Image (tube, rainbow, N blue to C red):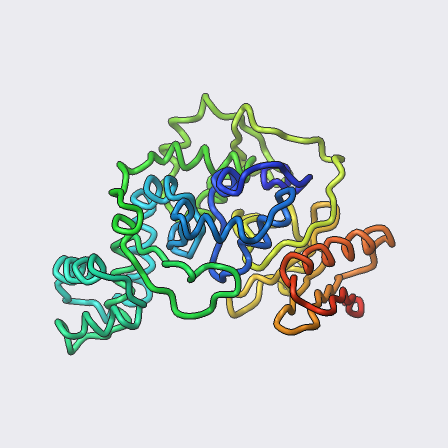
Length: 354
């Protein structure tokens, strides 16, 4: 909770927070905005939008080959290290359709196309089909996504933007080459600063990278070592904060796909097994969640597409009157930021789920 800036709202800049959190999951455009709002003092949605437009923050496939918001500096340093994750994802999804294709020629053609202009994945696939008409256009576009760092050009990735994203080469968009890859040691330190203490399996689940054992062994003397209640070895940075277990944790509204819900193999530290199916759905959606005392205690949903904006909160069990009041305040404050033009705003508590 402390590492994820959830014990209090912090007076950090947007860029500093994104870098501290080691990126924000950005599979959908709105969750990063809410994720920063719930962590930062006086955060305004326009601040993140500005960073996306001035190119200091970018939306690109990174950890686990999923879309993240990262600082431009982090993207340039960490994307080369994460390249095997991207290629593995392309192979798993489109390997058969890409078999036998001259991949260097495909990537060169794709880079030439994107060097001239940004284009959507569908447009890119169509243009590549002019060179390889007997090949699957979607598979070829996804191969480019795996082999090259492709930025989602704003307004893609900004609040409530849902049109297909124009794609641009990171080197073109940022006018800088991809850096010499950061070391695995660097990535491990950044992960632990945001999510530690954590196991080697946690690291793999978060990053998608395998074979991190040698790096952890190399860093062994520089790290602290613990065992959790199940005997699993946990690693941590010596200088990282470790608040006492009885430190009060305020209620918080986590967005869909929040970092906290995706960055560990063992998720029992923040959600009970009996509640997991209500948050982690079969179709891959990670629902927006309510935190009470540091544990997932319900789900919630924002509807701000009309003049009557509302947040609906469905708790998994009974909670104190004070927690409900605090949740109502949180939700109403979110509505003020997320739906400033709404004529009416409501916070609705659903019936308790057994």
